[in-house]
Length: 186
Image (cartoon, rainbow, N blue to C red; front, side, top):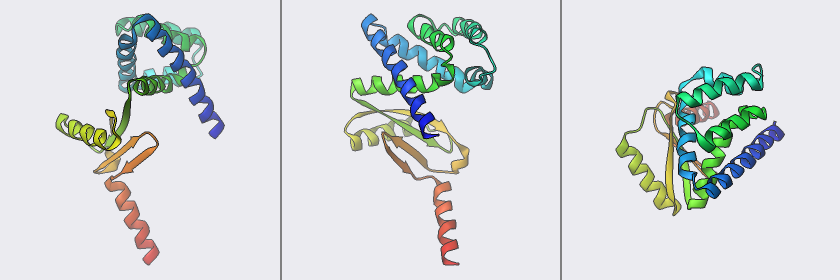
């Protein structure tokens, strides 16, 4: 399993690195960043699109045809669209979400930024995101971008991943720790 994870990570990083290099050479980095974020938003909204991207049951031609229509409708064009189509042609579409994440990480590193993956039980308000961004920037010494997700199973609190560090203040984790401590005592 670890070999598959590192293989996927390696493939994702290579593709993302090549995309970033091409985007910088042609001066369209901001456009690519925007278009990849839009595509990622489509993935977040559509279980059918996730199935198309991840399922080996679809041929490369079927994936490419469906994605071409989707990219046109979403007005995702240029280098980002060509990148998505290349991943489909090369049967690497299942790695595309990791490629997009790797692109964001590489771009943030070049900018001297860090990205924090923040998971909360309920959506965070703009004020909460701003306060969290400020606190994380102060503690890390870098400008921090927030990638927010919602997981109601946390019950309350936050799980923050920034780089290799993770801070888990979720109520779910605290309750599990309490349950474990109670078993040890009893």
